[in-house]
Length: 142
Image 1 (cartoon, rainbow, N blue to C red):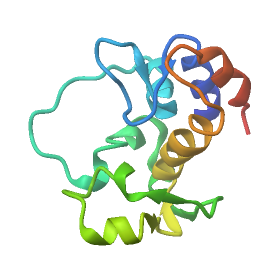
Image 2 (image 1 turned 120 degrees about the horizontal axis):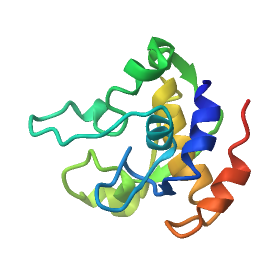
Image 3 (image 1 turned 30 degrees about the vertical axis):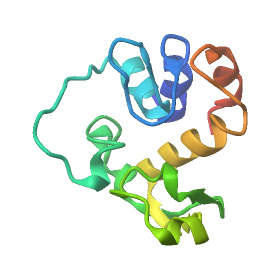
Image 4 (image 1 turned 180 degrees about the vertical axis):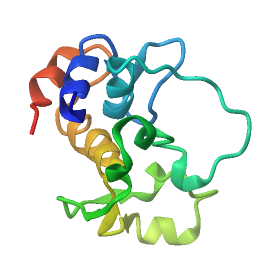
């Protein structure tokens, strides 16, 4: 099964919610989390500290392949508000003057997928955890 097909299939059973692969107790998650569920994967809590670069997309390459680790240019030129960047510890005075930051132009494919879901599908479409039907209609296989 292709990743795009798994995302579409997973969207029929997992409610779309940005920010993490899976939200326990809610049966919700991002596009990559939907794909994991569609492929028969499960989630478990990890108590050890994780590197910041892995918190959002941990181990999806073990299911779909190492091609997800390849760096590619993002298909968007967007900038995100600093307050949405979970990797920052606290707001600084610069955040008030410069409320946006620039994402790296090249990112791992798995991070690009997570970014596109979180900031282009969920925000642009106005999706929330109650409207998984819209996600299925926008997640065509490519």
